[in-house]
Image (tube, rainbow, N blue to C red; front, top):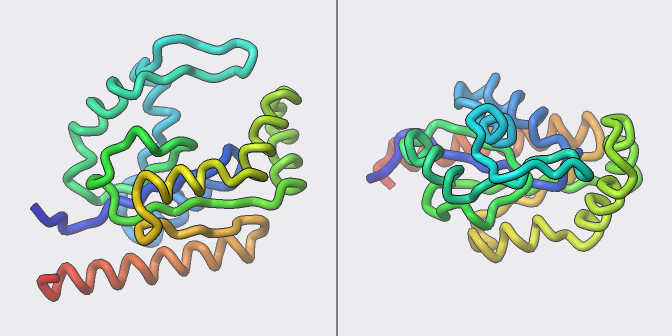
Length: 176
């Protein structure tokens, strides 16, 4: 079944601007924002809490089961820092946000992340772990890499995704 509205996944290292990009995209497109980290917390879709890293250890099966209630219909922009457990056919575009490491460090420091967590996330960005994960899982053609170091980058990224969305909707309307 062809969706009438796409699903877009925005992923990247914590601090790259996923939530901000999603909020702006939803304001302009009318798509619904799914903040997966919040959903996991609110619906208790995790198996344990890691006090040292101050984060949940989410249960992939519980998360996929919950998302399967509404995501396959389309019309969503979802943000999360991991993607290789999600069904490939649920997403029409995967945006991987990247951020220069000194910018990322400052953003995470302002969030009062523990030093160990900051270092792990900066290393994740250096080694482009999430970009490689997304390309391997979804295929390179489905992945849009987008640098997000500044407000100018953010504006350009919103415009780029909106252009993609307009093309996607044009193809659907044309029957393709």
